[in-house]
Image 1 (cartoon, helix red, strand yellow):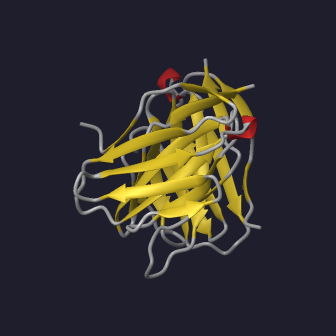
Image 2 (spheres, rainbow over the protein chains, first blue to last red; image 1 turned 120 degrees about the horizontal axis):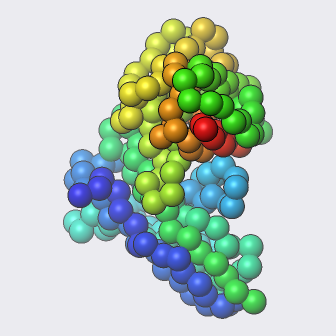
Length: 109
Length: 115
């Protein structure tokens, strides 16, 4: 089993839709969690950290379920500019992070 | 803004050639990383470095070596390039310290093709 797994995608959604991505991780001792965004032919950039109590940043909501070992990212009111690959990232120890394979999102006019 | 630069965006080499990929960051970050990214596999860590002259193997170090002679520069070396090393190579840096790895800042990537 891979250490970090994500929905296979691709997700093709119309503008204005709500879309949710899930990510599961295998190491129960994992410490920190992040969502990165990677545009086509660009480098990954941090979208948001994921806190235990859940957190929101505008149209984006991240949640963590430690008992089930998954994190989620919800995007409301999708925009064309949200089209990208979303990478789930798990920090398993002081010095180790694992990137998931990513989920591709296309928002369609 | 943190800036991480990589020496080339696109590189084409032949099997058996020695390849150098260079990465420079301008924010005095302690930690630097080299990843490769392949479709369906995500980013996989090749090597990382906590400090000058220090290096640690990542998950897939075979066929690669690294050099960190200065804090701002981290080089990835393919001693004898092979076709299975065709990939996107991404360099990243992050502050170190007690918090360990947090936000990583990536360079634009080098797409290497080995013929």
